[in-house]
Length: 235
Image 1 (cartoon, rainbow, N blue to C red):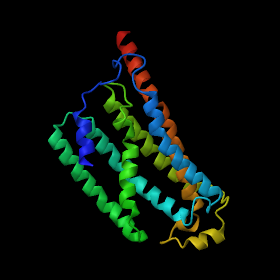
Image 2 (image 1 turned 135 degrees about the vertical axis):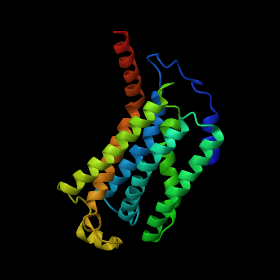
Image 3 (image 1 turned 180 degrees about the horizontal axis):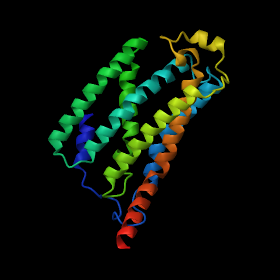
């Protein structure tokens, strides 16, 4: 993993991109590739909500654990992406990224132990790469990388918190997640998500849809922000 971060830090800024103040800055194609995994996850949540057994057995428990992991991803990806686009020397940057990874892996390991499975350890890295894909694919306009990182982190964190509250407080239809389906899942622990897992499934569907839509238009939003700031300074 450190080799990926190291190779990203070696790339000269602006390679293959237009100037920062040009209207075409940022790659819409990078936005499409960045959004595709999130649309795929949203589809998995929606399919499981409508027909729990369509994608395989025990998908509800897998997706519930995925949303718990995403909480860690939202927290960690902001720090990691910020380091990746920073001017910190390469060696120190790699060391910091490795240390952060080890720190967050402790939390992932605790989740894995609680659910009695170790696939979350690999899922953590896949989700992290997915959340950092905008940086890795060079989606941000040149010179606007930090703004892109902060905006993406803010959108993800805000969507997670607001949708978690909304799906907890508002009525959520069961659709295909009947009481019999819940009983067959043998979900570990107690709480609202365990008693009414349609809430976390609806949460995941809405969250990844919002993130995917943001990824599609993030480069255009950041480019408009630069154009707007430049116009106000000229005035």
